[in-house]
Image 1 (spheres, helix red, strand yellow):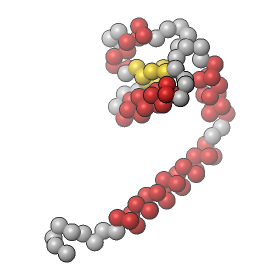
Image 2: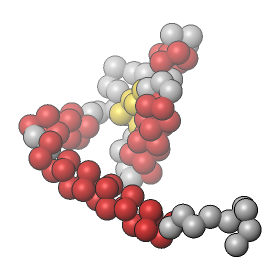
Image 3: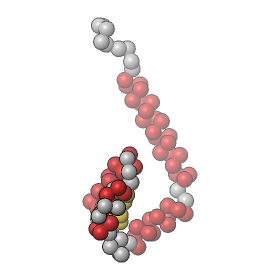
Image 4: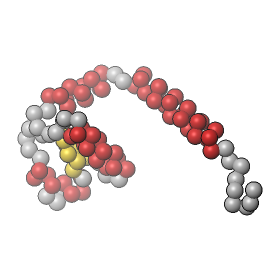
Length: 96
């Protein structure tokens, strides 16, 4: 082994990360409540497009959510809040 090699156990580390993430995902079940139902109903009742917005990391996630919704049959698009005040609000209609 040379100085650039390590004894770090990548497999064990990867398995531990998956275990942590699985536990966190499992814990989310308890947080699904009436607000989740309301959010689902709002999306289903939307006559226009679902508008998703966010800035920074939440913007990246929002952009992915909008793309996923659109690709699975729910018309939607992402609007960056900074751009919204510089003309992009014009893309949004009353039915959105």
